[in-house]
Image 1 (cartoon, one colour):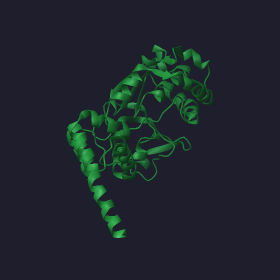
Image 2: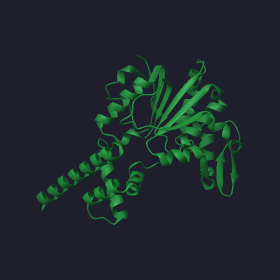
Image 3: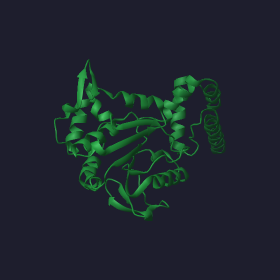
Image 4: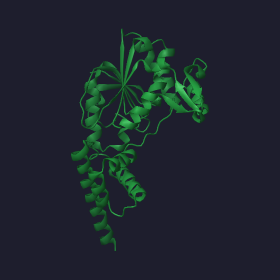
Length: 279
């Protein structure tokens, strides 16, 4: 029985590999070096929703039907975000990074894996309060065009604003948070002034190259889904994209430790995963 279970597991790994290769060849999205347990759970979830028994059947559906692919894509790139998510990180950025950015004549920031934009808008609010927004440009990118469109719209359900206001205050907010948005019929619309300094664009961390030199790169809770090979590849991309003395900010479950580039940064705030490029 155990031998049969092993064979079934190996067969499913092959099916997953073929599905991901097909997606890459057909649509250009590369999930081949994502963590297998994570990607497998999401594929099984989509199988259940589609009423399919085998991964091979899902492959046929996805390769022939763009709508089926978009449904699977929504599972593979699950957006988990909120305004001022992890407020301690934003507080650390306000205290430890913003003073360094004030020394610069202009500031370019890349927010990679921006999802639906909540953290990007949080950063815009923070930069405004620290007197940096007027000389800043934020490039917010994601692999998912649907998520990017939601980010461009800048609309948020009003029932989330109580938690978001709490996050804002914990992040060192200096004003009445309601001054940054207007509400209408249960929807919150963020003020246009926050969006003027943000460029939303599609970018694939796996297949696309660097497109500018940045003083700050945010990539939080994205690489937790990557295997070691892909994680190191993306770190190379960020290193190439950062100006000397630039800051790299990762998620709480991510670290530069044990990566080939660890010695080229200094730890600026270990608890909040803020690093500064030194060489």
